[in-house]
Length: 174
Image: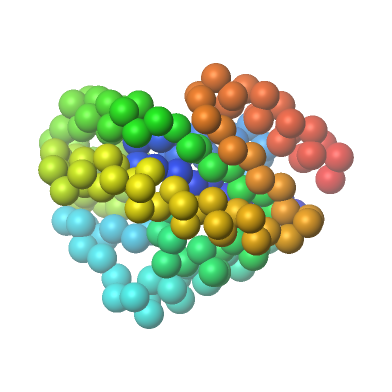
């Protein structure tokens, strides 16, 4: 079965791409932010979260979006394909800010219930620091994939249609 992991900086478009892929490929969709955040932005303990991610990753097929590098060791071995949205930080920051403007004061479908969109300066700083803090770790993780795992590194959103077409051919061949 096909299990596609979509990772990248906040604001890169992971949730949007994952939704499109799940719909196009007929696969179940898992937004990790929806699983992680409870009402009012509450979060599980680390052991609870790891148990939950283990159960989600054990499913036979999925498109899963979200970084949560602390659970890469659970999710990456199960993935048949990994899509890394490695977009410029200015683009990610701009997209995240635009998302706040569009959804401010309302809950988004890719988040847990009762998680109202708000502006969070520390989150914006995290996006800005992502290339320095997380990009090298992600690149090293991707270098250690098994030969049977495919990785797609997208540096532009214009790369998405070709990715969707290629993944669809693998789905049809399965």
